[in-house]
Length: 442
Image (tube, rainbow, N blue to C red; front, side, top):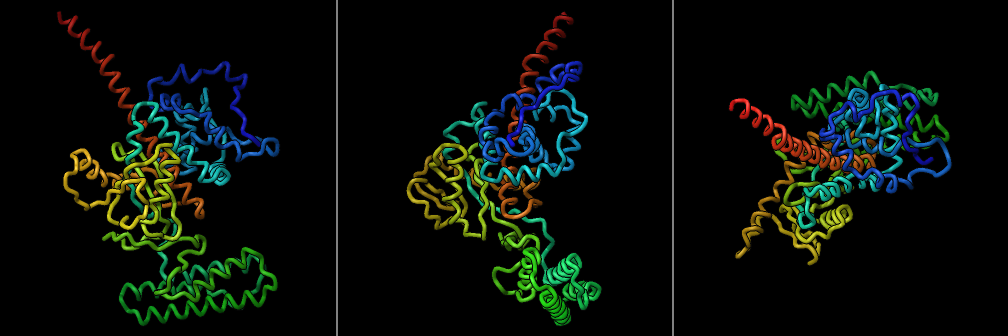
């Protein structure tokens, strides 16, 4: 059912209002008053039934919680705990009086994200850009020139060695058989754990023949479990059938195979190499990030499934930028990995390292600003929860990337509002104190 507006109870008439308690010049209060919250009711109206089921939580509450979660790098559980303690966060989410209990359970955050989806959540990113334009922080001409780059958003999985995957398959198959009352000939849990530990120690000692011997035994155990479960389950359900198919992939795949399975619970994970000296392989999904060339506002965060070539992602990335900002991109500044992009003549693509004679000084300065997108990606990972995705599936990867971009823009807006407050204090309060001190001295 459609969410209802937050209503004030009769008891709240006798309680102190936030306007009497909080600092009206605080950056969160200024930001809450500047955001167009009604646009989210319109953008997300299709997600809820008009007359069926219980009323959903207020849209401003859920949107505000997700803004705070990704702006301040909090988990769902920690966010709910801090929200009860912070009156500024409560005001930001639309409450007018102090709340001593959070109105939602942490699991409601996950359910709300899954119901809304990644496409509609782009409205949160779009509002940050529109607010920056309304505040005079971004000009339309700034949105025509963007920097683009790709990164890997790692998934919350362990490093997928063959020994770990095979032993994990043994554990999952044994647990599934016990849950369905299947009496296995042997579970192989105890001997499988010993072989997994031995294989990792032999690999560390570079005794690869002994390591391969352990892996062959583990692979044999997985095959026995698969055949035993298939014999004793006449009509396996959908979950068991999926688990058996993934276990067979792990059982048959070899180290040099392509399209390997790296996780039983996240089968879409890709092995991506970005040429980093400290981390040769990353396991997750490729994310394209686009920022404005001048002030580094994030204007696009898009998931690309299957590890495509960087140059082949540029066209869709620029289309996403135009969808978010509503402004056509004229210049894109990229690195050498985008050679052969095939974007046509509508957009001028400036590839790093291409030197042209008689280039204006302003254009040379813009080309130097191309590398500014790389530390921005680093801040997305360290400050806005994009270093490791804890949300399930490809939809979770796309949602996490978009909300991380929205959270980064929100932090930028908070810094600008805080800087404006400091400037106002210097012009009004500090100058008055200086004038009073001068008068007293005279």
